[in-house]
Image (cartoon, rainbow, N blue to C red; front, side, top):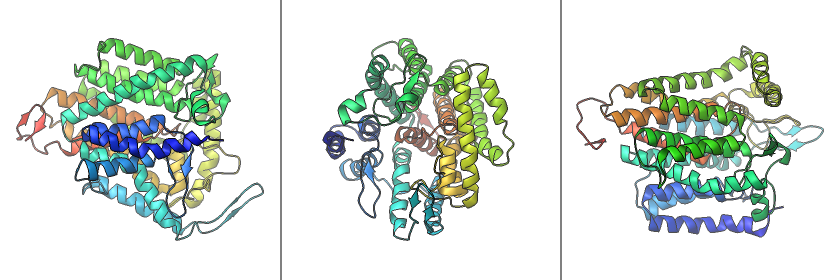
Length: 451
């Protein structure tokens, strides 16, 4: 059971956000409001009022970031992305959510559970919930405009990772205890955090896999800055990167280790055009997997056997996920267009949902899946189309590396549900930057900023 401080932390965070916007510039204030809340607030605790979305770890920081940008920093922030593909996909997701509510009025009555149907009264709450989920993307898309802004957000990510690493190291050594000590309960299954004779750190993110993937994002930001020859911190860049790689391996997330290796090789050993091509291949692969799974063409058995030649425990875990995914996919196809909706309606009574893609497809159908994955993938596709027009070497480097990081974010949503406010900020930052790249080659640039 959560203690009183868990609820107090949620109540205090709006005041923390106000102070941040009073003391800092808008980009750092927005970053620390959203990412700080994601990293520090308790998991699974919400203020759940009727007819409005639950207010908790992922919603309160986003709401306060919007209020801070508009009413304290006086930024002109629209409720939706600017006109174009991003707005169309955003609206598609919201409209699809309305369709989801309207097509799920029936109750689910089974031996071990009862789930009421959705009604028109749920429409407002569902639409606002979807908007809040994507609000970090909307904010960073409109705030990140220049090369300097892009560097700033990457430096903030590395700073957050280095600060958080103190808590991560503590739990690697002492076991995942901080959430229980501070907020009164452990947020997940203990057994899943025991690996390779040690522990996965959980800190305040809910699961060790999410901590490991956060470190992947931090490593990607650090590698990008190092390639740009931007000083990351008071310590030499190579030392910081070595430290982050070591920390990633100590966090014992097998998949994240692989993603970290791809980042390291893709950024340090290849030119920017090749890094961009790698990002495109990864995005295509990430989009292909759900389609191949639906058509029963993906070689699940072969992949499990391949992983088994490296690690039997990882092969067992992957095989279990695939089996669960097949059952969930069968259920999702019963309502393939708009999905089953929330409250675990998309799940079977004894099923486990791991991959974000199957969660999206099960809850929101093909429309919801296409809209959300489209928002992520389109940033890479549009960047690829604009890449040849870039004149500055640093522009090419930062866009290519940022695209690779975005591609790995979408790839990790196949086996895991690691999509977080921090990840949406990364995607939105890339989208905002490419939206402000000149569409022709005859623009003059000073310090990488179009005029």
